Length: 588
Image 1 (cartoon, rainbow, N blue to C red):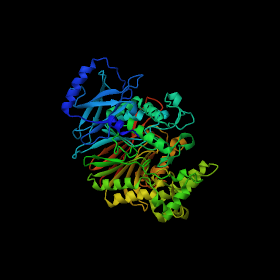
Image 2: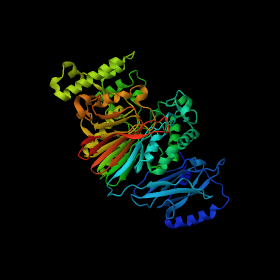
Image 3: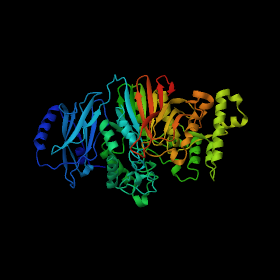
Image 4: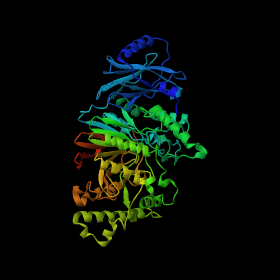
């Protein structure tokens, strides 16, 4: 954690317009001096917009020097900076990895601005565009949602496509970087050499220098720089900004014997995140606390959660049980002992409860790292999938039998079911179980409490989720099956999903769209797949979510890239899903 004096240099508040004019005059005077020129190698960025302010970010360093770099920042209403509205001074130094952040205040709601940084020699950074959150009477907001950008896996075409869209804001739900080294055997590195996407440093990142170097590698990407310069970002971390499958007291990919103390590594990772991301620190005394809220006029309140570092107990599937923790999960859920297990701390849960209650916006959005819906698969299918040796034919038979039973019931009613089919759909005889205990499914009681709170408050709840590398649209239901809201989960920027395990064709069975040929369009969104609460899935393509919010509806467009293995690509909408304020859902 940076000391208070470093932090004062790191974050500088805005000055008045009068001071801005004076600083501009000084800049002109010093521009012709012999001051050394700084390099702005990693572009500019803005983030954490509010109705009257926004954070600005850059990195500035003099080549082959560790000298402090003095900068002037400017915010203008025009690209030529003829009308400078705000300006001030800030410094970069080794203490902050030569990054600088400015909290610019006194801006107008729902307004767009140009900004830049200039060094003592008058050299300018890239010019960025940003905007504040809308006024209370805003009619519509459009934003892009991202997660899981693995540099070595492919090109950031997703960021490029979003920069060319009409999105006004970017929301990143975590895994902005990955901690793995460059070894060919590590996750996502198979094509890295051929693509020229080898990460650095070459080993898993552990030290302060390691984490800083990894962010520098990612921020060297031109598509990422362009999207940062185009619009303000609202971000939260997930596990890979620290280490895979992280929780409060450790991580799956942290080995104390060779990588040292977990709390030390965690503090380093958090410090560097705050250095390199345009985030406003909610609590300067605690860099591990990043949950915060944003009011987009009266349309929606976005509650950015930290489901990873701040309060998470160890995952069931990381205890080393032979069954992956399923036994612990079942016991905990049946006996009620799971009630004490947390995905988020009690403090964060109380903050969310109070925030939703206080919000008068039409919609309540949860910016959330992990899949929140109940992704439960029938035991008959899981048993076939877990057979040793593997038997693909048996798996397909189990899937087909279950879907046929659902289709029969949907078309002709429960009376038409054979005894075998009735048994398959009887959750006592054929219980459903989660397949990912690192998600909210591994913390069912904590999830239940949040959903019941939203239900009691009569809120229109929408979760935005990442982490899974695949695209999903689900119902958010309580443990008794009561629908409380919906979840839009976006695909990854580059990180491989189900398709990398040979399961890319599974989507139509998971969401029930495989039954369209039998039942027609009524099979879409009807809960007729292997997962009851799943209405749409794509388990093959990479991309992002383009969300449009009005008082009447929330529309999510799943935008997919044709490839991430070439810089030549096309982007196309794979599915458009609209949720009306009345609760009605339409698919296109």
